[in-house]
Figure 1 (tube, rainbow, N blue to C red):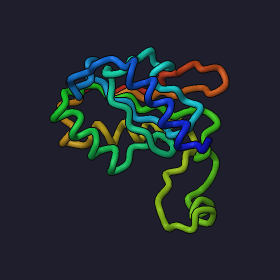
Figure 2 (figure 1 turned 90 degrees about the horizontal axis):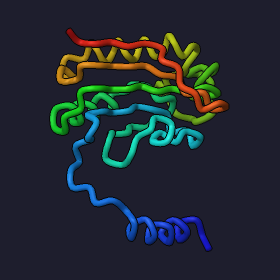
Figure 3 (figure 1 turned 30 degrees about the vertical axis):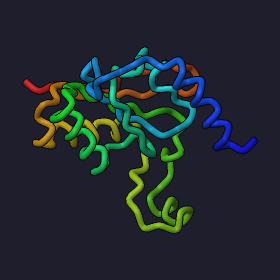
Length: 161
């Protein structure tokens, strides 16, 4: 059986048992920006259930223009007022340079490598807090998830007055 057929077969069981959610609004008014790393089960790690939060995933869990676009919709149209940015230990973007990543991928992109999680999260929280069109968001929090222990450490927080 190929990989896609396994996904489709699994979906039949999911569809039969899934909770009926009628609203796209996250009930906890929360958005989580995190890495695409397959070791992170965002819902389990944060004690969330389907329908409680928007989850935006990208390489490194960094705040990019596309994350800002998604958060603008999430906050203005869907009631989100809290944003968590969660990076993680042993990330593929930690300790590498943009130039190294450009060589590996063959693409001239800004990959937003991470030298230090605290510094990267502070930078991302500053970007979020300084983005005027995210005015409905009242709280921004930076976390680091440890992929070995499953524990999470809070690194920073910004609140609007």
